[in-house]
Image 1 (cartoon, rainbow, N blue to C red):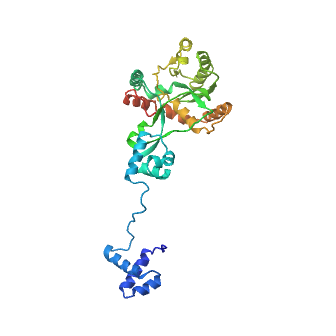
Image 2 (cartoon, rainbow, N blue to C red):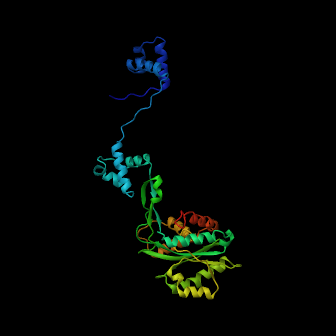
Image 3 (cartoon, one colour):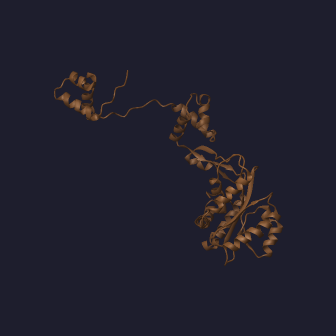
Length: 339
């Protein structure tokens, strides 16, 4: 039977009013092109409900019943990385019914299973947690102006071949902190850079040819770190921040810095969340154009262009976040923080 056009509430009210005033059901049916039963039903609805509004309809039956939803929950809890598309492709075997990926997404959302981007983190040893906590407790007492005189340095690897894609996991909101994977810092198809920054802006940002050893690091210190330090701190002394990479802590760089009376900030191991320049690396990686077959020299020019456009306000915002980062380490008892 073909569904006819639904009558508006005003038309229904008009029909009921005329019917109660003596107009016959047959005449009303002919005038409004409806059947007589509709006229009687409208009168009954008015008397029963007090209005002529449509009641809420139940809608079409859901594609997945309660039992099938429980199966879905079990599958996702065991394998949070499985995608709705893959679930849909194998839904007949996994759930017992063929359903589309959009339906799976809706069901997951209804049962409070959300999609989270997988965060890459390092696994901190207990010994290094203690060192991080000790560092934070000591330096959280420093005035924020202390951090204005620090030259922050670090190395970073940018991929120019391979996949840059994010990973996702489907988890209940209470378990969203589980959306992590161990961090693999360097791999094939990458170009490494050294860079530095301070409260007063961004310093040199240079590609590193070959493996970064003590000899190459001495060149970087002499030709870039000191040059940037003198440019960013023209009238004041500055403190060098560097992590505990072997090329940094070797005998040659250590003696070189000591002979020149360069103040070096003692740095706890496994503490990228305390080094504000790590945020800059994340920003640059986020602004890169995705191309799995990009050439090395093109990648170098691309990231240098992004670095050149970084603003002073961004640098100052990061430096001013250091006290909060230290407090976060204290709150985490030396563990990893949101930074």
